[in-house]
Length: 588
Image (cartoon, rainbow, N blue to C red; front, top):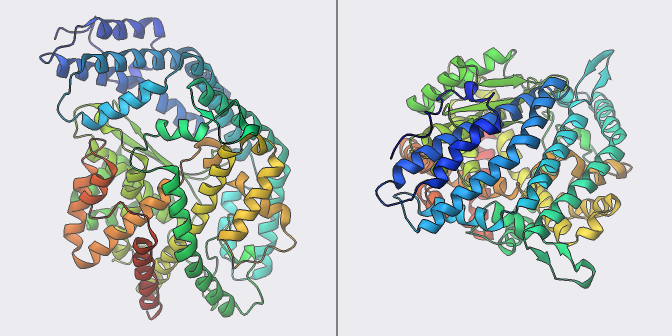
C-alpha cells in the first residue's frame, strides 16, 4: 500500500495541535482505497495509527481536565476538542468502519474486533454527535461540583478524600463528627447534582431513541428511548443479558448478603455497641470497616506518595519480573498522578495513551490502606495495556470492561502475599489485618455493587419516574435496605437516600458497575488458583491479558483460569474461601 498524503507523526504531542482541516485528508485517503486481501493489513496499520493519534489526543485532554477541574485554559481546550473535532472524528471513524465491513474481508485476529465494529456501526447516528458533546460537558459539570468540595477540619481546609483517614480514628465521637461534616457538604450540593442528573437522563434517552432503541414495556413509557438496550450494545455485551445481571444480583442477595451481615455482627460485638452506625465504617460510602475494634492504631502503610510507589514497585517485582519492569516504566516516565488535592476530579482510573503505548494512572491518595489497594488495582489495568500493546492494531487492543476489571482485581489478589515482605507496607501482623480488611471489603462490595446495578436497571426501565430525583431517592433507599442490612441509619434518612449522588459511575459511566462484581468473582478464582500454584496462576493471568480484545469473555475468563459464571454456586465457593481465609488470618 502507498504512503498516505504525507507520513503521520509518531508523536502524539506534535499531533495535538493539528486542526481538523489538516486531519481530515488522512481519513479521506483511507476511505478512497479499494480494499483487497492483499492490502487490508497495510490499510489497517494506517487506520490504527491515525485512530491511536486521535484517541491519545482525546485522552490527554481528559486527563488534564480531571487533574484540575478549575483550570479554565484546560477546560477550554477540552471543550474545543469535543465541540469542533470529536464529532467529525467519530463520523470519519464510522466511514472507515462501514468500509471495512462492506469489504467482507476477515483479517487474521479480527473476528472479535469485527463483531465489535459492526455493533458500533449499527448504533452510530450523526444526530447523536452533538448529544455526546452535551454528555461530556455534563460529566465535566459533575466532576467540577464534586472536585470543588472542601470542609474545614480543626481549622484546616480539606477535601472529603483527605478526611478519610479520620474515619479510622479509634475515637467514635471523632469519626461521627467527621462523617457529619462531609455529609453536610455533599447535601449542600444536592440540588445542583439533581439538576445535572435530570439533564443527563434526558440526553441519554434521546440518544437511545435516535439510535432506534425504544422502551415499549409500558404505556407510560411509550416513545421513550430504551437506554439500557442502547448501552448494552454500546458496551458490546454479547455474552450476557440484563436478565443475567438480575440473576447475579439475586445470587448476591442469597449468598453474600448473609455473609456480610455475619461480619457486621462480628464487628458490632467487638466494638461493644448496640448497633453499627455509618461512622463505624470507613467513609461516607458506608461499607468499609473503619477501625480495629480492639483499639489497635489504624494502619498507616506509607507516609509519602514516593514511599507508596517504591513499595508497590517492589511488590510487582516479586509478583513477576516483567510486570515490575512495566511499573518502573510508568514511574520513570511520570505516568502516575496519585495524591489528592483540591479541584482534582473524584475517583481513580487508569487510561491509555494509544499512540505512545503507555498507560496512565490517576488517583486521590490520602495515606490509607485503601490507597495501596487502589494503586495495585489500577496497576493491573496498566499491565493489561502493556500486554495488549503487543497486538498490532488498536482495534485489537480494545478490551471488554468485564475482563479489564479481572486484570485489576486479579492483581490485588496476586499481590497480597507480598504486602509484608522486607521493606514492604506492613509487619506480618499488620499485613494480616490489611488482608482481612481487603477480603471483608470484597464481601461487602458485592451487595453494594448490586445496589448500584439494580438502581440503574430501575432508572432505565422507568425513566419517566427517574426523571424526578425524589423517586430516585426512594428507590435507592429501598435497594439499600434490601442489600445492605447490618448498619443503623436511623435519623440519617437524607444521607441514606442520596447515596446515589456519591457513586460517580451513575453519573459519568452509566451501567459500568456490574463489571466490577463479575470481575471480582473471576479474580477470586484466579486467586484460588494461585493458592495451589502461584507461578502458573500468574502465567495464565498474563496470557489472558495478552489477548486484549481478540477473544470472547468466556474465552478470556477460561484462559485466566476462571469460569464465566455468576450463579449462586460459583459465588458460594469464592465467599467460602474468603471467609475461611479471614478466619485463618485472624489467628495471626
